[in-house]
Every structure is written in C-alpha cells, then in structure tokens.
Length: 123
Length: 108
Image (tube, rainbow over all chains, first blue to last red; front, side, top):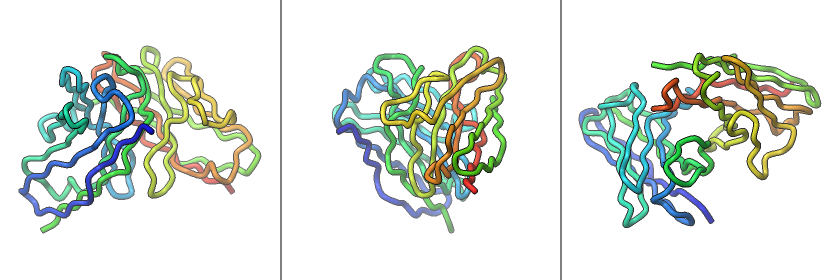
C-alpha cells in the first residue's frame, strides 16, 4: 500500500526551530516529486514547495521561499519541512503529498497525502 | 505571485448539478487539477489534467477547461459531496504550483 505517514503534532514557541517529517512507503520514493501544503486554521490550501528525491531538485512558492526548507533522505524514504525561526503565523496543519507521475515531470496531481501535522506556535 | 480565483460557495439541491469555476491567467497554458476536502481530512485528487478522473472517483465528477477558466462539474449531487473543493495549477512557466481560493459546496 502506498502511504505517507507524517510526524506528530508540535507545540513550539516563537523563534524556535522545527523539522517535521513525512515517511513514504509502498512506492519508489526517489522517482516521484513530493510536496508540502499548508492549511492555516479555517483557511484554504497553500502550495509551499516540492522536491524530487532522486536529485534533490527543489522548487518553492514565492510566498514560502526563504521561509522554510524542504529536504529528503532517500535512504530512509523520508521528506522533511524545516523552519529556523518559527512565528505565530506558522500555526497551521501541514500536509505532505506525492505527485502521481513517476519520473522528472511535475505535471500530475497530488494523488497520495499524509494525514497532516498540526504545528502550533505560541508564547 | 500567481493567484487563482474560485467562488467562495456554491449551494445545490440533491440530484442537481453543481459547477465550480476556477479563473487563472495561466490556465490556457497549464493543466488544472481538482481536489475535494472534507472537514478534518486530507484532500483527495478528483480530476487531473483538466478532464481526467482517477480510478475510484465517481463518474458524476467531471472537469473542463477553456481559456482562463477551468470548471468542475458535479452531476447528480449527493449529500456526501458536501465539501470544500480546490483547483490547482501552475504559473505560466510551470515553476511552481498554486491552489485556488477554494469553494464550499453545500447540499441543501
């Protein structure tokens, strides 16, 4: 079964760092783009960025470039989303999701999603 | 940065047809994708590459695209179709993706 399992909920203070994870299984992790999506409380979906594990090619939305870092460890088929200094406005649910198409194309939908990681940033 | 616009809400009676539009300047060049999200759940891909339906998605869901507008049509709406729907596409050069603003479908 193809699945993405995300790390658990986090409660952090402003200024702290954080790295959340997304463990993939059931498919060739290296050859599918994997992305991150933010959903702030009561709001819509926001596409943050995407990474191709085979060569670590990474693309960010202009809204998130420089604010977060997307990475992956192919050896343990896990993708990451990282912040160096959290803000209260980072409070949200974060989803990882796999691009359906295999190979280097991003031209496909996000067909498998993680369960979401809730991040709460509060002093 | 690039934005795509959807109507905030659509209301429809059971058995009727719901149409949700998504407007974006890059849509003549880029495919549209549609997702359904129910409260407390992760989104589900229901339409890809403008018109294609993944396996397991009911036939009452269909997609089309013309010019700067993509449309999701739900024919014969059922109570279980009450959810938020999001379009997704890429900006002109295809460098990054964007979600539309989202549409809440209410089944009366």
